[in-house]
Image (cartoon, rainbow, N blue to C red; front, side, top):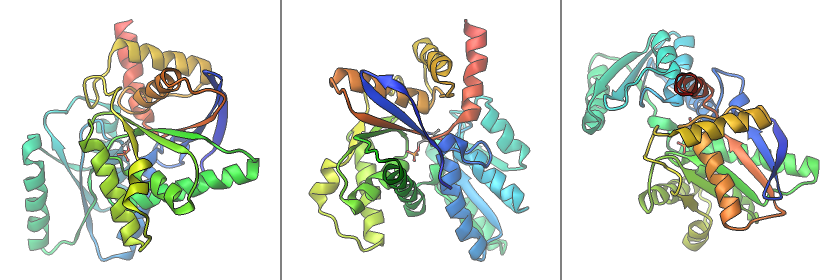
Length: 311
Ligand SMILES: *Cc1c(COP(=O)(O)O)cnc(C)c1O
């Protein structure tokens, strides 16, 4: 895959680099594309004939999974919480791929998935289930691979990143980077900026993902090492998942003007804003900082529409 890493300028005298996962060349890319390639490897090798997953109408994951299912002419079922059903470009594309949406109150999502999987099997179908956001060891593995790409870049360009910042949602992407770091015993800080979850739960889920992944590979790393390497900041969730304000939209606009890089108000905008504040408020300077751009280009266009209406 090997997505580009580009230098974009300075924040508080730290040189800032961005790894462009948003440029993964499939369905507007992003971390969900990197994960979905591995899930569909397993799908293609196995004996499956339809796909089941879940996510909100904002979900980049649902778009990419629906695209890959449609490409294979297999049916994709998407369980979606009715609480977040606003019309987004991701939702429109996911629908246009011919996905079957099943919309229920968020409290019923779990049971609805169980029932759908049982019903499909009863009909003689062989559903492949993907957790929301591509959570799980396969999703984690995708970001161990990405971590290895970062190491290759450092080796080839004689550079060392002191920090990696990223947007953390289900925490799977961060768990992959942390696992990669632990496997290589590297010195650097990987800082996840939460886009919705609060501590201690959000951080706890990442710890579980790292332990689960390393355990599945029979790699033993002390509990203490995993603990001290898991940094999850919940100061920038600003109201919760998908909720933003005009300050954030204005920030996104400024970053786009200054760097030409599109961010969105659900994920990467919050993370970039959080990173910027974190660097200033912790008086971090003269370091090399990498921002993992996790994608979400269609959400950027939703934001552009909002800005156009609001300003
Ligand atoms: C899903 C998503 C994230 C969060 O990734 P997790 O692995 O769930 O933590 C971050 N950025 C974008 C653009 C996403 O779509």
